[in-house]
Length: 506
Image (cartoon, rainbow, N blue to C red; front, side, top):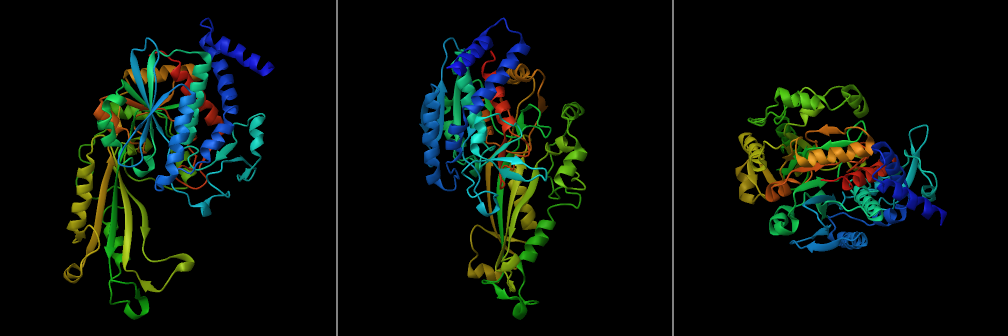
């Protein structure tokens, strides 16, 4: 009863218009911590749901969970049906609202290789603290009921990418509802359950449900803060295209002793081909790759405002040098990138066999920028491969093709979505900056374009609205990797960030 009274008094103080901004921020600190502590049972339930969209049967429980969670916060939910997994739209209208804010949340996660995780189940969240040797050790979940250490972390698949931000938004809505705050804008939340698959059905769905998604601006609660872990706004993200290559050798693997020096090795062919795609300094060697990309002196000055410590970044990554693309990290990610995601040919390690493999596979991706067209960039790669003497097929070669061509490759490509970029001096940017200034008493770090990709361009293009991302999670969260985690301090600050934004007038 006493705790309830204290909370009510805090809520009353925060609602008081006579409070100064500093006092308001202090109260918001208290509230975000209080609501974070009240969230951990719900968070544990949510994080425990497997959410690999490669396994569609895992997604339906996540959709139902979100329907229930948003309904509890006063939202009306609607499934936007696609040819596969649906999108989920949650809507909450307010009296006298003149504008509508569309919010994007991602709910699905990357696949799990549990052999690489330091816990029995990647979907059962584990609370951990770091020891003096830098090792993360599991501690009792019930510690979350006591005083929180901001440096403790919750380890779970999607903890940061992006179910942590989902929970931050829900708890921020709890604050808004409990304070009885009436935003002067309506809220629409679109939930994506296939983001890690490249959101293949999103562009068509945005067009099909254009009226349902109609809004004045888009805010994305996703991604890590700047490497300094300071409050951050990101005004753009690169798009993505995927390319799969498979070079064919003998019909079946051959004994390397009996047929070495006779049968060509597809792993060698693929390696030599890949080597032609880059110069030694890391720049892509494919002709016309960087056409149309210019970084003006004005933009360079904007990029310099991001407080990157280049020496520390290289130290953290354990790299002695960087690639020769741009003069610094922020400049580098303004250009399109071509990357090797994985290579496969026969077996390695204790599975090594003395064979010439039948095929060799490379998975590539292209990170697109606003100035580049995905289909054009894929064609540049394809034309380069053809110019290296390869005959391309879409599946396995026929016997006739095997006998006719020395270099045969399966080439498959898909453009997932393009890049987006919003100018700093837009209404949405000013609104978000003001909310974050209220939350933290200072301006956020402003990043022109992030290196990663999120499927936002279909909204920007089809709905014709500006978009800005509000990243909240710790930059060292291991997203897409084993032992993904979210730092408790970032979780609490994320609730504070979103609550401050939602309470800011447009």
